[in-house]
Image (cartoon, rainbow, N blue to C red; front, top):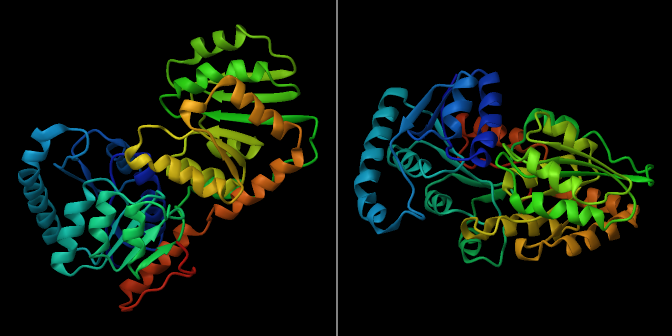
Length: 379
């Protein structure tokens, strides 16, 4: 079987889609190895847990590190290029896949120099710097979400003929949860899931208790508040009067697939993975984009769902108890709208993304000169 090198580093949004593809490729008998960074990022923990060899390259990013980092970047990039070149000499990959993170730049560069086929996957609705760099060398550029066509970076990528939207690869448990439909019959209550992420979202913890106190109707609430935030969040809920509200505050949710499936409305940030999982399961959402995300890509991710009718987008600066209460109350009073939003959300989701990418790998490894995904070229 073939040797396949995957590069993905830094965040779960890059690593988990890559891991879904890696597991499928290994199941087909391919030898898969992984390139990450020397930093203690998520790939350093997750990849070895799945018995995938991890090569850790000394490589750092540019953004937010000042002039000193910029001045040392040529030396850093040259060193990373040498490390990756040595890896290519020993592993000799037949195919390279990149899923994001600055380590992908030297990996894609060496793949291009050595004539190794390259596929690059962009999870967000606004392409990152690395994606734009690799797009000129890749056989195909694969998108997880519809591009925000108003952004110059998106417009630049759209000019290329090798760009296709296949979706973001999802975990098998999320795909299984997509079979669970919202309970259209329980008009007497609503299940609300609030997802703050591993660190929690302080604005959620501060705003939700006040907002729920202003809502009429029966609401069952599960609020994931992040590490170390449970006591403070519970105190915030206890400080307000909640009529007909059942609130469960948890630091973490181990089974996110079941939590998504049980929800009627989900309040969340708008990272690519969260958006794709919510749409994959098909649930109405209120997205509150992280205001300082690079290129404001979370707003673009959220708009992709909102424009399809599956979500409400609230800027963090507008995320007040009064405004949120009005948005939630309108949905509570029109349950049929929730089911419509769930359907529209599901239309953005793509459950076959992993299959599409693996099929493209098969085509390239079989020597096809013009690999074609089993989807229309919709950006």
